Length: 529
Image (cartoon, rainbow, N blue to C red):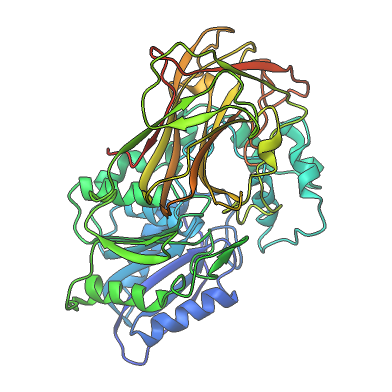
């Protein structure tokens, strides 16, 4: 590298040389089975696969500081590969999760040889996925995995107990180690200059490279993939493709998530899809006919659909309104989701958030996949969850695009969280999570600075719930949950307004949601930019 550090690479060459190179950088070990299989597929397709341990991981020198060096290092690796005698001088990049985000950081360095990127389940910028100003408690699981040069064993820890630990500042000790990275992240609860070297989405228009964007509707980092695709298209960048399947963070590995089977078409020849994209963008092989820029899997019908844009023009924007007689607590309450605006002065709904008894977010212990199409029927029996349900649908309803809730809320505490969740309620009562989002009131105006919360004052907040793609059959019902926690996906708001990193004691918060003509709380489906 430019500073003298040496990175280690495995190189898998095709039979005919010189060949274009595909650089794959990872913190999880370049010699793993999945990495080796992917490189073999690339080599059989006529590409030289360059698998690289990122700085400070595996066999590479230096110290591992997540994302901090990966932009310049990526540019240096691309230039090195392009200069080798076995390379044509054309280089693409490929990677998922960590390996996807660092492709964007490298592309910002404007490497001359970069011809295309394949970005799978790409993480977003700071605070896009973590709307509380703090990393998800489950991120400590990832820090433990990457605590040394090779992936660490995780199954000897009661992670749910770790996530319950207070204060957040010593959660690493509760997991049996000390993590400087975790502790440093906790020190930066606003979007200060410390984050700048790891951000890319605010500069995405500087990049002019064809990109294949891949994710799944239940990827716990889903929001970055369609957002990046849309931003590149808006910037006029050619060669953008979006592929979204019925998958979690491990894309195209199973047709079943939880209790939901997405059918025999859920799994595709992803290797062939990727190689075809690289052939087109790197080798200049023109497909006949050209593929659509957007290919999405529609859950419910369990079929693939080609579109020309994201979100597709064929999905009409739809609004539902939250309504009740002031007793929407739990699925046994009177909360309704109605298509017409509320015209009468309805009483607000009220619930108590107890920091010592947070509303659960259904998930396994590992941060490798946070949540899925889980059944929230049981969670909805709690009185601190507001439940608004539509009448059974008279005809099918397609939700294909971004989802949001606009809520008018207030709290008795110095701070609170407003969590919204969208669900598909099957005739059997199965309440399938589709997507969700949260706003912490102190960050209601963004993460540049914290804003004071005045107890008793009403605030209008917009809760981005990411994207989904589903066709609800007639007879199903649509449901919105409103709560003030989703543990352990997000840290629990203690309600004191004090330092959330060192705090251990919380106060109950009495929260209110209004739905009146002047304060219309509502669900927005298929939003347009």
